[in-house]
Amino acid sequence: MTNPAPNQANQASKQAPKQAPNQAPNQSSNQAPKKASKGLKLTGLIVLALIAVALCPFLGAELIPLKAIMTPGHPEAEVFWALRVPRTIAAFLAGSGLALGGMVFQALFRNPLATPYTLGVASGASLGASVYFWLGISFLGGIGPLGASLLGAGLSMALVFLATRSQGGLSTPVMLLAGVIVNFFFSSLVLFIQYLSSASDSLRIIGWLMGSLVGLETARLADLGFIVLTGGIVIRSLAPEIDLLVSGEEIAASRGVEVARTKLIIFIVASIMVGAIVSLTGPIGFVGLMVPQAARWVLGWSHRILTVAVFFLGGAYLAAADLLARVILAPAEIPIGVITALAGGPFFLFTLFSVRRKGQLL
Amino acid sequence: MTPILEVKGFSLVLGGVGLLKDISFTVNDGQYLSIIGPNGAGKSTLVKALLRLHNGVKTTGSILINGRDLHSYPRKELARLIGYAPQAGGWIPPYTIRELVLLSRYPRPDKKRDLAASDKALTLTGLTALADRPLNSLSGGERQKAYIAAALAQETPILALDEPSAFLDPKHAFELDSLLKDLNLTHHLTVITVTHDLNHPALAGGLALVLKKGNLLFFGEANALFKGSILEEAFEHRFIHLAHPNDGRPVVLSQ
Image (cartoon, rainbow over all chains, first blue to last red):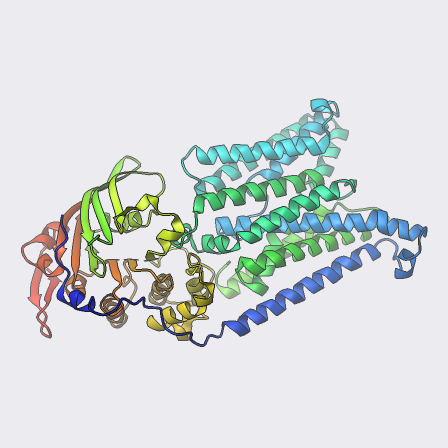
């Protein structure tokens, strides 16, 4: 149909110079104090997190005094620099990566119960490690539990991606469903393998599944650091897009976000980061669930600052959990995954009570 | 003059179901278009198609914005042309009104204007006093206005709104109608709005478009909509046609 002439009022209005509705002069805004307050909170969180992390290597079964670490050749300095510092750094990096993974999946799925493991990466890594322990060190030419779990994580990623793409596009609900299915299926396979395994292999599998930083080679710290920092930078650079995705995919697209591309980048980066961490440490639970939630309570949902806060808070949380794991039954060590899981239960209860008080989970 | 929006023989199929069938119409810069029709007619589908918001659909025909094919626009460029306010139902983002409005500045490279533009959008929609309230603490109507403010903050020449007055009481619906008319007349914005208020096209003036089961039943001057039995045919319902006692514009009442 052709377009009839515009109504008279519209014609009259065209005599006026064209003006967008928002071309008003700058108005006063109360954004500045709010931003400053959030900036202050973020700075406070970072300082607290760094202090906590800096203290961790000094504490343990034996307290190491500051003076000792300054003395070259001192046995305690050796323990401090060769064992505790790398271990604390590993805990920090793993905690940061897992917390960031949880944060982006919670944003992507708009669900605070999402975890870095929701899309099945951890169960894939667990399956790889379980198969390795079951079949023995000759499996795949002796690639080690790290190689096997990386393979498993990659397999789960590929399956989730292909299953999602098979339905056309990159639908978030389909991705979530595919992740949950892969998660359950691979977890069942892990149980099956455990059933088939000898008692000693089964114990090794259980030990791996609990998550632990024991035995993490110092040589792997650089790899871990590279993956977590790269992942963190990519996620931080996508903060505006993530904020808009939280508003809903339709709104995000209407504001100019390339939704499918952004989701794909988030999926790949977060999965690689989480897959690599889990392959190195086993599936340490609850960090990715609790830390982003706690950070949001203090700082809200702006991922520009939340990403930074979650990075430091996640790292500090896991470094502190690792400290507890080292001291509670010293000289024996509790797997760190047990500590985070024990803290997770009460946190969940607290969250639920808080939901009731605030009226909304998010 | 190139129309700001030109839809030519546009059809849209989702999961084998034809939701829009051979739709053609043009809207010139600065016009006001009211889209009406019964539930399931394809009104929201049409508006979303103008923003390329559909996934997994098959389309034929074309949609041109400023004479250029819709699909040739990068998303950010399109977001600088069409501001969009969705229906306020469903998911409530965990943001304050101000945060939601500021997020709409995403496609705009001029970050220095963000605060001024969002403040202006809040003022226009009367939301300044509520700006720091979380969306989940607002009524449906207030939330709807927040989405309109967010669309305004995009500072686009076209505003597309999906049932903007759905949750508003008569007073606020009237205020919103006045705002949209003012944006259209004073600021020369092209307004495209889906509405269930059959009296809205006559009040707003401009153009009206009627959809029924994905087909275009009527497109033309809003006043012509009330002549004949177009509304009766569209809604399969009888209406009482009256003249408004204040200004004589056509008014319909449900039988």
